[in-house]
Amino acid sequence: VSTQSTGPLSFASIQMKQTVGILFVFCLVNLAFSQIPGAKTVLSQKGINYAKEVGLEILRQKVSTVVIPNQSGEAHVDVIGKIDWDLTNIILSELQFGTSDIVIQPGKGLAISISSVSAHITLDWHYRESSFPHISDSGSADIDVQSTSITATLVFGDSSGKPTVAASSDNVHIGDLSIHLHGGASWLYDLFINLLKGIIIDAAQKALDGAIVSVINTDLNKELQKIPQEQKVGDKAAIEFSLVSAPEFGTDYVALNEIGEFILLPNELPPIKPTVVLPNIDTTDMLEVIISEFTLNTASWAFWAAGFMKGVVTAKQVPPDSPIQLNTSDWKSLVPQLYNMYPNLAMEVSADASIYPVGHFSTAGISVYGEGDLTVSVIKGNNSLPAFVLGVKLTTKGDVFLEGLRIYGNLTYLNDTIYLKQSYIGNFDPSNIDVLVQFAISGIILPYINNFLSVGIKIPVIPDVELVGPIVSFRNGYITVSSDVKYTG
Image 1 (cartoon, rainbow, N blue to C red):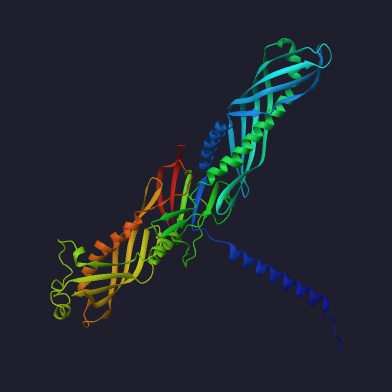
Image 2 (cartoon, rainbow, N blue to C red):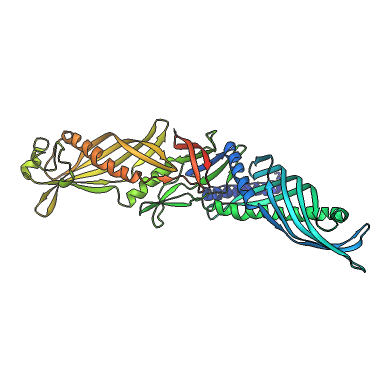
């Protein structure tokens, strides 16, 4: 009998199983904590280029005046000798940008470069001879900043669901200075000022660099924080636009992946999860907002859970010119036993959605399917007596339109199916009153729902942004709003 050692093979097999197990758990954890966005806000390369122009103008205004720290030291100047010098009241102003470029760094952020930058520096100068007889003099200087370039890399992240930005690197390079002295024996002191040219350049570069970083890290972040994170829609619901991840950088776009979810206030979440994976970009316009049918259905759930998809229509609410009123006399030929049991009595109809309606986006538009009950009752004295209950399966079609930055919806009747769910007056054919049901749906129920849709939701952008030529497009599982933009701030 021969035996063969399997020790090493068994150990390797155990290691492999452990590795596979770890990878499997890792994947499960990633799936558990990852979230498919319900909405996206995307800037194309065209939009990023426009944002760069707007941003640079804001930057130029923010750093239009930069105070440079006073400078002092010792130097040896021909003719004069050893001196103590100081430069005070150093102000950089009149900053102008030449040509600029912005490049998306996929997976990282944005790289900005500016060339042919010019500026003007004013300062007061003073010197004192170190040894006796301690000759001194003072004056001022005008300095033209020339051949200057600026580069910066912006890294984006998210904090508490809002985008953040930081300057990961920033560099100001001043190529040359043209110095003009005033006061004192300026013709003589060109020697000592030119000696200090490098010091002035270094101080100006550091001051301008610090001012630019401050604008990016502070002012730009403040603007990003103004992007709305939650919008109340009525008193009972709100839509969440918090980020589900840090901003996404592709080769030709920047995307904000947002929750895009309606909640029932104060903080009840819907029992729905997004399933449609939204595209990164679907336009050549500057801006694109992508909204999935998940957002539509969480809105439906929120209003349903808030109790807005139920109501009662009384006889007094029916228009006087309606061909049929809510009185059993008008229903005599349609449901004879109703009149026989309750002659000439007022009626009311209670509508109640049994579950929140479900909507779908497709290239054909919006379709919404819902189910509910219509309870028809008669009013006898002070009592409301149920006569019968109709089950209704309703299909509507819808449309989306824009006004300014707000997106609105509107539903119209498509078709319905009714069946007799329960009767307290005996069996009858409900098809006889299908026309009345259609009238109630079209004339009462849908206008009631459209009243909520007329509130609309605002596109989540920073203040002072207007849409220019927006277009709404329908896709399978989502809609897009693509547009150029104009900054009016």
